[in-house]
Length: 516
Image (cartoon, rainbow, N blue to C red; front, side):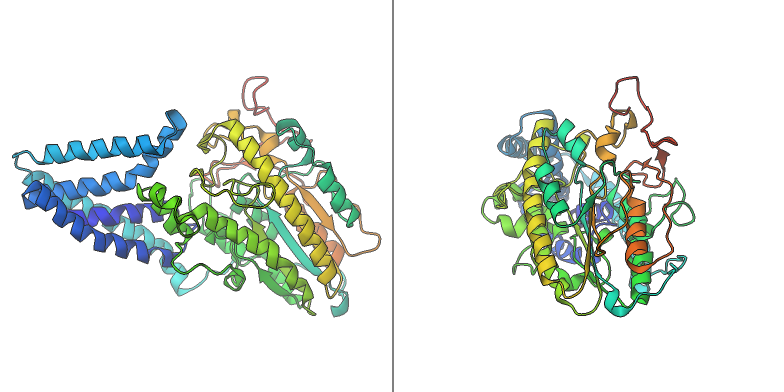
């Protein structure tokens, strides 16, 4: 039976490898397709090998070969000729060689028996991992113990403004754009100032990963134990729970606010209720998880040129971005005070948009990778980032004007980035990371007051909503000391403080290295 289990195993492995980022509902269709496809593949391999045992071994090899293609192609992109045709040719030759080997008369019953044990064991292990992760989510949503936010003075219902909290993923600070990307962002920043925004000149992130940064910002504090697990943990569920049941939304509900979260496409950064604010999928279009799984097979390059909007995860993400920019301003029409949360995965890779807003038709499979994990060359990252940032700037300008024009009450608009870009990011080697690039952020805040309080130039992400809630609703939230922490993506809670008491970045490599 191992051909059936080896057809299911890559799907389960891909799911557990991304378990904190995807929905369980997206798993069932790939499992069903793999199960149904395993039977004709098994039958065909049996006919080719003219023996049931050798045919089963060949079928199991086929599934390993089939789902390994995308990983092989990404390796070629990074280390060799960037050619899908070459990858397909080499893979075809490899499978032909396997047919020749399996067609020998050697008895393979012992090998087939071993494959049964391996396949059943691995599938059982993956199902246990999924069950352990998903069971608590199916039965109840864990409560997050958080101290209540107190207000110094009550505000009347009519004085409570709409609050728009917009997170542009990976958007860099102006000086970093000028130094590392050779891009002058003054025109966009001047537009924001004319619309009443204050912009922090030296703002920075407290954490270098999206879920860490959002969990900290929305909960108005640092992610120290017991708020999150200790440094040995790799469980990201506490971060999702912190985002789902955050202190900001709890406080705003007490103040009579409606909460309007927009879908992001990633389970880990979506609040309850975001399903109502998600673009409609085309009939037959794959989910992002299903499309990403397809990218590990030889089918994606064959389908991408013909059906990009149905099978390409990067195009699906792009539609979510366009939906947020287009529909977010309409929330300003509500007569009730409203908190709008939108995490927009742009200008972060993948580089899907031309500067005029049209989509790149056929994409290389770069996905969400940054820095050392980005499959293209550094120049490709810089060029794609600049192009996409111009698109974001234009959409933000339109969005801000529409919010101000539609708003039924005073409005506060917060536009920040969760962290900076990652052209010089290396998760495994802190000494190679350009800390200024990764931790630089955009912080632009428009308050409804005629004479708003001055925004600190060096504000960090953890203090952004503390400042806004204090100014708009009288919350008792004095600023916290600003600290910045680096952690590896695979060990999210193993924090290394990268700033000193004066807020300067520490040196982690030899003098003159990028980590300085």
